[in-house]
Length: 205
Image (cartoon, rainbow, N blue to C red; front, side, top):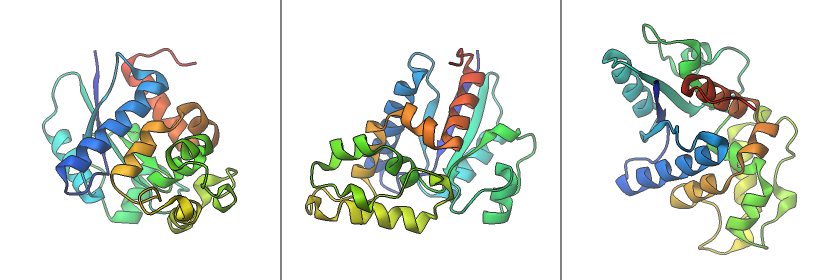
């Protein structure tokens, strides 16, 4: 049986935020149908730390373990993930790494967040300004800055303690997301789920 280990960009240098990051992604993946066959989630902090952790996992292979790198793409993606990361970050593809061992949040984690308007309303309440959110058509084509600024504008009137900010609130939002909505609007999220289903032997719907 294959054990998948996700090395995720997120959580910064704070142990408490890394715990919240793992929790958020774990809850999202459980709702995506992986409960009982969950990949392990390693919240690595910065994107460079995520890549470093992935490289270490590739250098110490263990029977049945399959590490996968999951990071923001930071920009539009028009080529395979490893080539994108080489051009974007100067990261060499580790020896033996398969195509599907690099997975991208396109163009950033907040793109996932703005795809699910119902989850945003549950987290931020009725003062959420829906009109400030980007249209869900071609969401992955919208720049990281556009998406993050739109999310900040949409939650600006929700109160000092409720508006969007990186950290605990962002990972609470990840936990609230509906994976079926993300699959509908975000091809790269759907690809991540297909990859995990294939590796974990879960029948695809």
